[in-house]
Length: 428
Length: 182
Ligand SMILES: Cc1cc2nc3c(=O)[nH]c(=O)nc-3n(C[C@H](O)[C@H](O)[C@H](O)COP(=O)(O)O)c2cc1C
Ligand code: SF4
Ligand code: FES
Image (cartoon, rainbow over all chains, first blue to last red):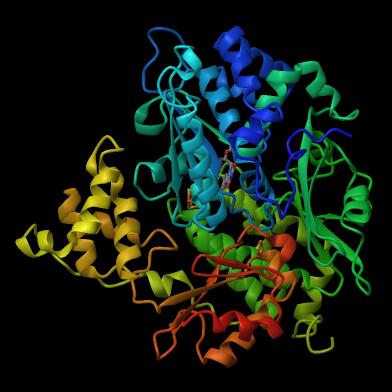
């Protein structure tokens, strides 16, 4: 089984420095692309490979790039941004790549920048990833010193600057247009689309924002080709491998690179070692806090974009949060809505006002003071804050676990009302 | 079940009523070290105000938190209004608009840590330090804050103190961890 992204990552050991990275084939994709491929050829190759964005939305990466104006009349500077904000609760996959192999990300970024002919690149890194920041700073420095960054890279005529930007904490910084505002020193509120960032992004110039994992795939696609990348998918409709994670009361929580489309069962039972003794699986969020619950009836669903969607949820970040039978679903969803209400940027009314309301209703249910009307009102909020009614995807994302909890665990909500307390606490 | 919902809001807001002045006072407030670091950031962006988040980080690094005076000084230095600077300062979770202790304890209160009972860790910390979320110990040593997912959910519950991440935290570990910070 091939694990191109994590082959050289050994948790606990320091990551490769430039020399070690190059000794294991590092920067050969960059040499190949700069030496023998046009930017358009790189774009086409990535489009053909079927690589879909690993940041949550799953859009074809090569296609996304193709909207960037190219050629002599294109506005400059153009920008490439690596989205390393990873703040979706339950998500810890980009950390592995950032700490485990920083040069792989840098090479992927230079390739992406070359494909869209960007002049300046940023890594937008979450403040909490202190170790990653230190490693990235060192690696960027090494790359500059070796002529892999800066003016006229490897004599190719292509130039690229790279900066590390560390955030100051806000979930919205991960939303790509809000991220651009944050990079410009503003509040991280989203921007209206269109114009899309490809046309008017950072400082009004063409910009691509890609997830860390997306970018880390690029050196391998350039080296091994589109057909190879597709074949990694192991019969799934999606190409490549994926970093999957499992957290919660399982025996072996962790993050693994596996062929796209492994089943939920294999992930939980084999890789995560099954549920901890005394706990049963009740449900799970397949790809972070803003994805719909799935339940034991979905154990044979493949973890790829289309299959998870067909099961009524989203692959999201591919890092799963497991809910066991001793954890109260109302308390679980309250925790999520507390997060979303707190992190709402306040830009649009339904989200700013609706999420705190949702949070309060869930808390009163959890305290045993909720009513059946609250349960109905919660249901209505899943519509009011659903797609199309808010400015960005935060609020609709927040509604996904709520609407599916109301679908699969309705009884638990109702028992909180009839028993006037949380049935999961106080020996209930 | 944790009912305290003191969070960033309590820490981050302040009733700044300062007026927009560019007096000598503001000019002299920032230290040479702070100015140098801010100048370095200004050089990387197309216009001064784009460096405001970096400026806030720099001043906070030197002074632990952002006071009204710091807001005014940064505003004057970057030719922004204090209200503009404050609107940015209060937006971000890790810019502190109220004083914090020498060490900030950030307890992850997000979903995987919820499932793995971060509430027990919080309760133990409350008992040991006699403070709740949003408060600082009377000796100014620790400030206790809740924080969103720290990105190590496979090792929940997790917490950070200053730059250090602690994973798979148990109540038994707390004394040893806290001892390191004085
Ligand atoms: C509220 C919100 C938070 C997000 N946070 C992240 C994040 O932390 N990291 C990330 O890569 N994408 C995040 N996204 C998705 C980005 O907007 C964007 O789709 C992604 O970075 C694009 O990269 P990709 O095409 O490589 O997937 C977030 C989206 C929303 C709505
Ligand atoms: S949906 Fe929420 S986070 Fe998104 S713009 Fe509206 S208020 Fe901000
Ligand atoms: S939920 Fe606590 S580290 Fe992710």
